[in-house]
Image 1 (spheres, one colour):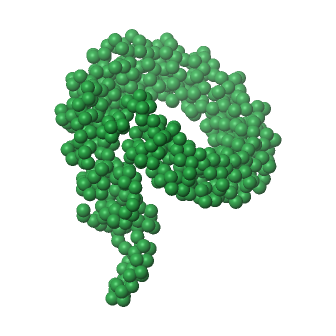
Image 2: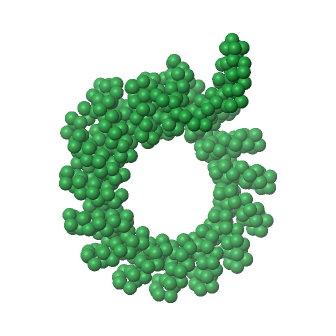
Image 3: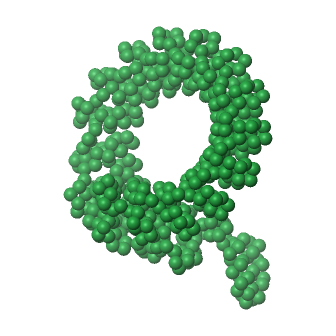
Length: 568
């Protein structure tokens, strides 16, 4: 493969100059050469991987990384790396890397997900190459899939993805070169995304709609009058009021007017309610003048909460429907002080403690202060808890100084879950509620390593097995293994499979003894992680319930095809 060029890939200039000056001496010192190489090696310093190098379109680095791989690299892990690298190569339209990955790096790579990705992106060139050059016996599986009565092969998902993304040529090629079972999903995808040419083609090829009402609603909310008119001609008896409701919600007044003139289903109060909540005053006014359904209190509540002051005042003056305390509560939560003040002066519904709670949660200190000074509802401990969760230290400090409700352990727990170490430290120094083991558990789960370390060093609550079970970061997982004693359960390996994280799976297998439970069967089947299935079959065969997979996951066609090929 040709090496990519560019300044980012050149070695450090200073190192180049020095090494050239001392080249004769340096050549005789192999250990020095190795040390310099390791120091300058991007694959080490930037933690490059095969998928990352492929995503960055760096063929020379791919070959370098492949040459440095250990001889005993797990073959299923290599398949996993290659499959993900292929997805990136397809996204970059790099046939050279696709060919290298399939033919040289790992011929055993499963290409089915990549075929679907090529179709989704409309890359006919790569799609044709992948289908015609399926490696390591996969052509046998492809052919097997195509012979099934319902033909559930990769081409069905491929045509569904291509239809969604408007790739007409790919849809036509797939239909003619790999005929698939009629797919209602494909034509719905085309309708949802407004690709009328594909809708017509699929319809002519026999891809009928199983639920026309859903497709009609999708066209209405997507503002596709041309598709609505086509559906009106071909599926005249499957319409509901959802069409006008959804069009009004999105502010598509032209669609609303066309439905009003050409259909009889009408709408419900949801139309004006949602149009008001989403700020479409022209649609609200047209519905008020031309339809009789009206609205409910939800209309003003939603408009107030979302800051549409003009609509709030128009509804107040033109509609008899009132609002509820939700209007001021949500307006306060979203920081719309002008609307809060207007509701206070012009309406009688008032608010509840949720107003100040919500304002504190959103960091709207000006609203918190106004409610404190003007209204009597006050707040609850939720105010400081939620302000801490979202990192609003100024609000936490003001509530601490001016209110008596205080907070709970949820304040520090939730601040930890969001990574707000400065809030945690202030609470630690100024409040007595503290936290629970939930703080470190959540910080681990979300990946806030700095918070995990701080809690480990400054608090005594520790964590539970939940931490290692739900650690999504390999770095944190290793740290917990080395620095904490809580350990994990079989859920750790299960969750690694659920996340598609082969590195965690391998680490747990090499360093822990808990193994995996039978529930891993459900996860690997649901996720259809073929490489992980093969690895689990090799190392934890007793935990894989093959019969259950066949009975419950018949729609996981790649996995079922693999089971048949393995004669399981």
